[in-house]
Amino acid sequence: MSRNADIAVVSAAAVELPDVETYCVAMATDEYGEQFGLTFQVPLSGEYDEQDRRLGMDTYSISNHLGRSIYGGIIAIAADPGASVLTMTFSTEATEELDIPATLRFHLANGKFDQVVEGLRRVLAEDGLRGSLP
Image (cartoon, rainbow, N blue to C red):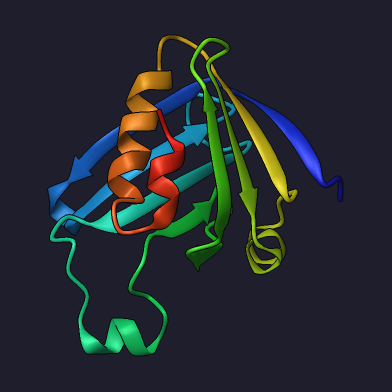
């Protein structure tokens, strides 16, 4: 698998999902997220219990379009507002579990850049990467 990939994002959203008590940022290469997509999630409460901490689930999760998931996994993130490009570098564990390249450059169309960046700020609120976003 290539170490880098450019992803043309066709569909993106950052939303609260009260029914499942989750805040979610999703990006996909097609309207329905069937071809390729990643979803970044945190609990609405922002709280984790002892079991979450013990199992390493006391952070954001990332899921791909095939339903594979991992907790954590982003090691670097950078945003280029002028080009509407968001670049993420993932841990080896995340690349293997999600079957993705180490670095993905998301090209966000249709004015979704600001919404996605703001949503990722919320997802990464407890993570040191948040400061990497404009």
